[in-house]
Length: 74
View 1 (cartoon, helix red, strand yellow):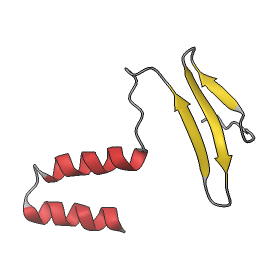
View 2: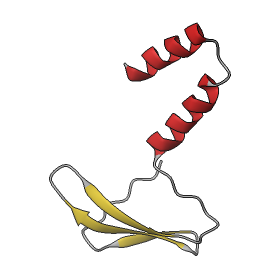
View 3: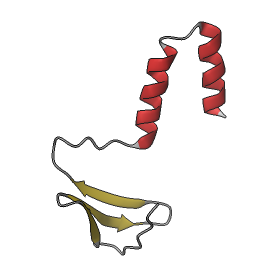
View 4: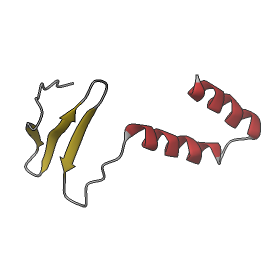
């Protein structure tokens, strides 16, 4: 894992066409702006995980789905 330190309004590049810019730094949050081509999907990790769990839950029995949901919510 690469760790990069940036200040407000500074940015870094991923490859030639993805720019990550620090837009605002607050007490508990950092706001970032992502400039990437439309063909590159950018999603929050928790949404991807929730979507994956929903797809898996659709294929499980009720007891299996409840057990996985209980573990995820812990």
